[in-house]
Length: 103
Length: 155
Image (cartoon, rainbow over all chains, first blue to last red):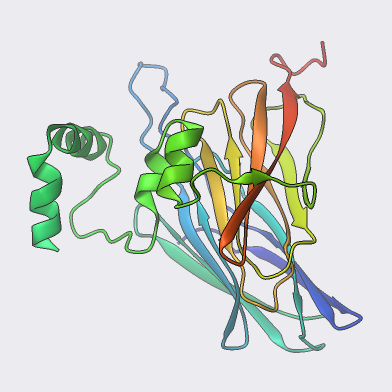
């Protein structure tokens, strides 16, 4: 389990803007440590954002997404107080889900 | 499942690749990356990536906007965004031409989600970045060059 994500969702004129900051190392598998051994790749592969039960975004990441990935997107609908849920899965099989209320 | 594994092992390059991945700890037994488009993310060149995404040769479009800095001082964190006014956008992908693997991320957008996403990517060196957008059944593309300053001192 990684650290909690920071999720912010704000509704304006019927459109909800979601900003997500995920806490993840996103190791590329290209780097070498001091001893010259390759640091194994470790990155988020899939991320899904839901508004209630409805998927509003699904993303697939490669290792070239920055450490602690940031993501912003907008969807139509959503109302104050409703929940937005974001979950991710990494290439080591770890996963995490966090939710936030639309403000 | 097992049949697929046999097929992969039969081809020489597949076996070598699997061995390499296993050694690097990427593949561990029992791990399922069921939906992740491995072929597309493993592809090295732009052309291979586009093929793996099923995009073929996308047309350049002025209706696709790639946003990002002209010069990025830190290649590890380059903010990029893709927006388009094209209708029925179901998929958006961000590609970096000169990265070891061109594909950085793909986004699948349901009908109610706007074709406007922002994220941050890593860039190994100065390169063109491409935004690929699927509108209806067709693929469109736009590009932007981002210069990466090594050393991080703005020189």
